[in-house]
Image 1 (cartoon, rainbow, N blue to C red):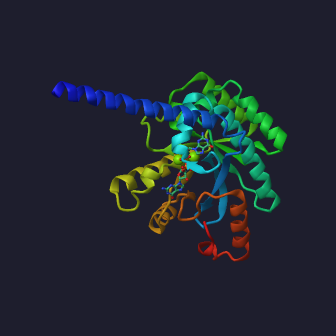
Image 2: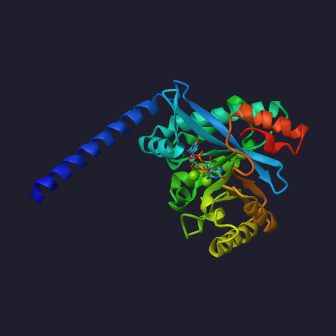
Image 3: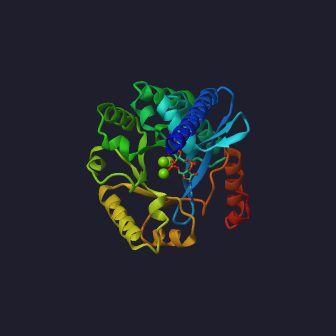
Length: 287
Ligand code: C2E
Ligand code: MG
Ligand code: MG
Ligand code: MG
C-alpha cells in the first residue's frame, strides 16, 4: 500500500513537473515574440541626491504578456538570460533608453540613465559594437548612460568581460555595481575594473537604521567607496528614517519608492514638470 502511494506520489510529482516545463516553454515562446509584438515597455525610476534633486533615472523593463498580463522582471529576466533572448531584448532596452533620454532632454530634464545589463549580454561578442552603434544612431553621448552590472560578472574575471568593459569605459560609458553588498567577499575586482558607482542593495537598506549589522556594513561600504573614489547609490529606500540615516552618513544618492516609483517616460515627464513649478507638490502626484 505504501508502495502504491509512493508511486502515485511520483506520478503526481512528474505531472506537476511536466506542467511546469510546458508552462516554461510557452512563457519562453511568448517572450521570444514580445519585442516585435510591442509588449515590452521601459519604465524609469528617478534617482535623487540628499536634497531630493534628480541625479538620474534607472531604466526598468516591463512586460505585458499577450499585451495584458504583467510578468515581473524577476521571472522573465532570468528566463531571457538562460535562453539567450536577453541579447535582442537588451539591445531593445538600450535603444529605448536612448530614445527616452532624448524625450527627457527635449523637455529640459536631461539626466543620465542607468541601464541594467546581464552577464550573458555582456559576454556577447557583439555587445560593445552594439552599444557603440546604438549611441551613434540615437545621438546619445556615452556619458549619458551608466551600465549596471552585478558583482558576479566581475568576480568571475572573464577575459571577454574585462575587455568589453575597458573598451566601453574608453568610450566614456560608466559602470555601476548593482545589488552591492549581497554577493561576494572578494573585492579585488573593485580596484581592477573601471567603475564609477556602487549601488547598495535594498536588503541592506531595509535594515536601516535599527539593525546594527546593516548599519555597520553600510558604514563600511560608504567609507570604502569614498576611499576608492566611487559614488554610492542607495537603492530601495522606502522610509524617511532610512533616507535621513543615509543623508546624515554621507550617502550622496538615493533611489526608492519613498522618492519615486518606476513609471512611464510620459508620467516621469509630467512629474518633473510639476516639480519645477511647485517643488513641494511631489506627494500629491499619482505614482
Ligand atoms: P535591480 O536592477 O536591482 O532594480 C531595482 C528593483 O527594485 C526594481 O525591481 C525596482 O522596481 C525595485 N525597487 C525600486 N525601489 C524600491 C523600493 O523602495 N522598494 C522595493 N521593495 N523595491 C524597489 P524590478 O523593476 O522588478 O526589477 C527587478 C530586477 O530585474 C532588477 O533589479 C534587474 O536586476 C532586473 N531588470 C529589470 N529591468 C532590466 C533590464 O532592462 N535588463 C536586465 N538585464 N535586467 C533588468
Ligand atoms: Mg539595477
Ligand atoms: Mg539592485
Ligand atoms: Mg538586480
